Length: 108
Image (cartoon, rainbow, N blue to C red):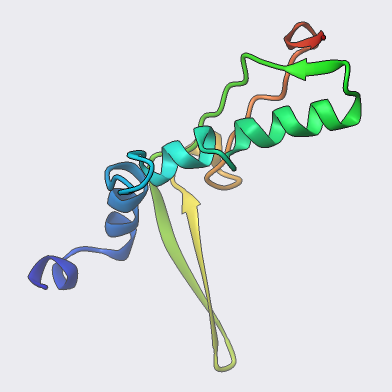
């Protein structure tokens, strides 16, 4: 309990995102977001294949930020929370996904 009260929420979320392993998958939340059954890579592959069944996506790069900051904004009686990357190159959020290049799409 002492750690919970003495550690910033941003740090706690960073630890959960990067180091806490899921008991079912054995992956961290960050790993699952990229490589999990419903992760970004799978979603890109499915979307490419759905757009044209003769194409497949492979060699997909998924680079998610490792740290962030919890930000809070109050509007009336409502608090809005966001967790945003504190890495300058990922300023738009926690996610950076490399779009498939033309040579990554292959027929068949």
